[in-house]
Length: 296
Ligand SMILES: Nc1ncnc2c1ncn2[C@@H]1O[C@H](COP(=O)(O)OP(=O)(O)OP(=O)(O)O)[C@@H](O)[C@H]1O
Image (cartoon, rainbow, N blue to C red; front, side, top):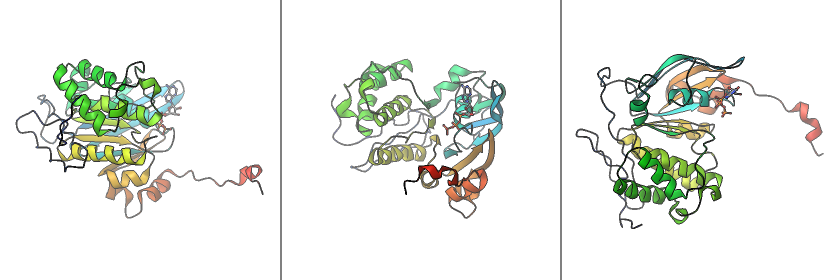
């Protein structure tokens, strides 16, 4: 597939009045600019990109999410952090229409997602955790499939597929079956499939897991450009340093509850986010019980 000699915006805004995407410098990855969200009558100019109230989920006796309230401002880069088993994936799955909550509401740009799942999901790009893909397709076919599934025309899908493969460093493996991709390549092709329709809200569950540092920097640049042009990103991660540098807002979740939420500076309160996280969550253990593991 032919590429433009100069990088260009992956998804230039199509709606009048939508913010202009910044022009990418020559060597940088193309910028992703979201389409403006539709404007349901309930939506105000300041409606959060995502608003959840009283989210609950129980699996048998296990309470995975115990009444989470969260507002993600439109145009923010929002980090979700918490220890293993905190309820992040469960909360994000409910917030994106993948898992029905036992209780609670989810609004995407003012629209009740569970009452209007099709309309709501049009605004969402999702990278789920432990994503299962149609891995007997090639990388290019998988992204194309995601675009066509979203009702996009073939020409646009072809252009964006080429742009995404290039931006994510997968162009050379465009015709390799996804089943033969490494873990990091699989993560990137799943991310490309989440981006193809230029959603207004991106929800990414651990997008940097298994991704090499150069690819991670490229992805961060794409996401920064996307946010700068009006999109909203929610990203879950275990890497506190990354969240502190990359995000402007953060929520700390543990035991199915939100322990702290706000701007990164508010939440970290003068400490590093990592130290604040350990203070909030606790759970540091000594390793005395593992004396048998020591070799000398
Ligand atoms: N389908 C399920 N059936 C039973 N229990 C589940 C299910 N999904 C999640 N859980 C439980 O719910 C709790 C929250 O899990 P969840 O995957 O949401 O945590 P997480 O914060 O994403 O964890 P991690 O950081 O390790 O990915 C855990 O105790 C988990 O065992």
